[in-house]
Amino acid sequence: MKIKQVATLLPFDKLIKLLICLSIGTQLIIILYNNYTGFYPFDSLTQFAVRLIKGSFLSFIVYFFITILNLIAIQYLNKTFDWQHQTIKRIVVQLILTSLIAAAVALPITILVHWITPYPMGVEIILYTNVIIFIIINISTMMILEGWYYFLESTKAKRITEKLQNELSQIRFEVLKSQLNPHFIFNSLNVLSSLIETDVNKSQQFFDEFAQIYRYVLETIEKPVVTLKEELNFIRSYIFLQQIRYGEALRYSVNIPSSALNQMLPPLSLQLVMENVLKHNSISEFQPLHIEVYTNKDMLIVKNNIQQKVSNYKSTGLGQLNLTKRYAMISDKKPKFRVETNDYIVKLPLINTTYYESSYH
Image 1: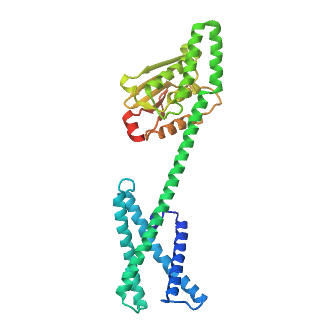
Image 2: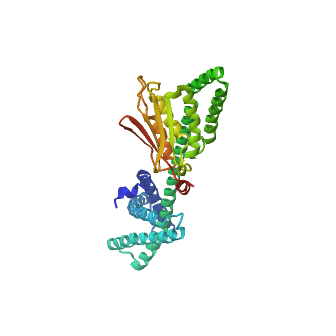
Image 3: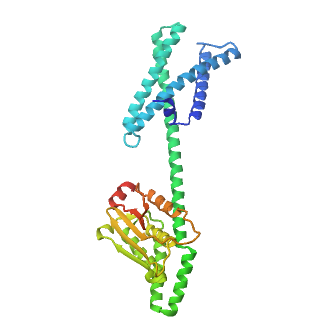
């Protein structure tokens, strides 16, 4: 396992700074304690500084190797004994690994130092003492690393959550904004004004369907998913308003089995698709637009014949991106958009109720 891969668990530059501080702090404690007990006193500030520099350098090397081994242990334990479900096992195994790592580092270092400059007392006592000291130090180090790692992960999770919430709020705003599109309102009110003068009954029906659209928007804008049945009822009102405007030039058909009606999708998905269809295609009695809605396995399919408008308007692709993001909030499934011969086809994944409840609740 490469050091760089292990070090990615924590910011490498900050990790080095932490190890430097730990090294200096450890040596200060050791030097001052030895001086206080008379075990190894220093005679001058120069001697103190030399010992501090040399000791800190050696401590840094020891801390570095111990830290790398600790990070390898943390990486292994995160995969095999997670804190949430195996807390007791994690604590026991981590204490054992931490002690073994400390002993594995303390033994060769103590023997090497004794070989270079023999200890005045027996090496066995020094070995035992150093192993205990290293275990205590390493348990403290492991606690610092675990606490730091947990803090970084929780901070990262919080940032991701905030980002998703912001994206979701933006998506909801865009959907609501598209429903409150001034052109849509202006055209609808113009049609309603004409109907009032020519057909009072139909104008009342038009007004009811118009109100139904905005009632549905307000009721579902905060919902992550709705049933296909709810979405189809809504889109029936939307298409009704459009057919009043375009007449027989706009032809709409639905072929959905009752078994699919309780499956789910993001609210206002169909409206977004329909809006794009009407936006990008010309509609007239000489060029009627056919929109078909049907299902194929776990997909809701919307198909229309292509009658590209002759205009300077260029598609930005925001509608497709919006729909893809909304699906990403609730599922790993993605909508599909493609051209087949003379038809444009959109495939919207239908989400099973059981799948949604088990994955997102």
